[in-house]
Length: 107
Image 1 (cartoon, rainbow, N blue to C red):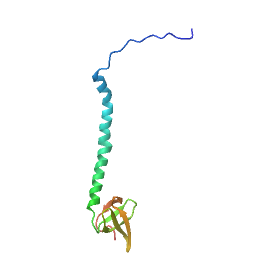
Image 2 (cartoon, helix red, strand yellow):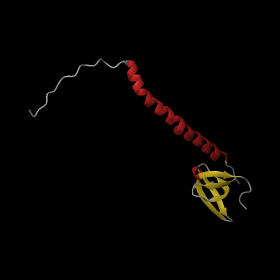
Image 3 (cartoon, rainbow, N blue to C red):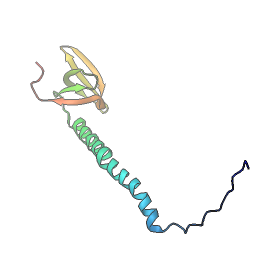
Image 4 (tube, rainbow, N blue to C red):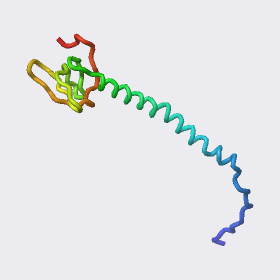
């Protein structure tokens, strides 16, 4: 009375290889879209930033990641000295350079 009857269900056949591939198709499509929308543009930006940092020379006007604007006075292997005012130099890492300004921006 209190317990309902349990009936066995008919056995289904094994899943075909085509249905398992179709089941993975949305996952594969998500990874492809993720690659083209996020990963590839990020790698391109990193490559451009690295090329910009390697191309800086003494006298270039730059903006640091912290917002300091100045002229490069000394170049080192991993550090750059940026002159932010007359007689005031700041030492920053090369990777902290976020932008190279056109010549003559600073006066």
